Length: 121
Image (cartoon, rainbow, N blue to C red; front, side, top):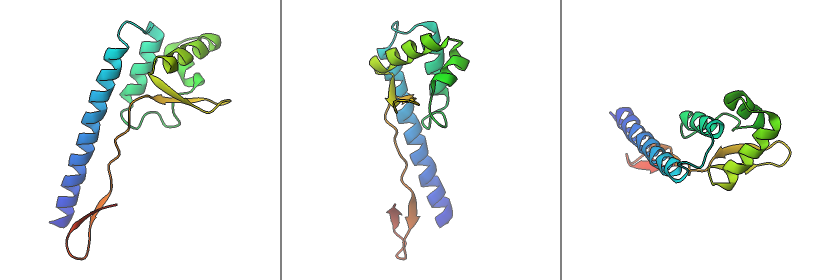
């Protein structure tokens, strides 16, 4: 019974985190409505498609080129524009990585202590 309860609570928390991500994503897309070109929108939707965890290794210029079909110089401008518009957050200088500018809602691990109480870790 305890394993079932832990699994159920974890599933509920994961679902709530996903719902919060969907709400944040929708707010971001509403804010950016009519401000993005087709290539930017295509790349942004592809990042969003990955869900709250985003791309493994984050979005890079090389991934943008592949997804959006843009040239290198255009890619740099597009990504910088997405950062300036608040859609993406850039980390790193030389090998920049870009993540979606929505908060990630973590799901704390839970367990049961010796007294049978739920404990968040």
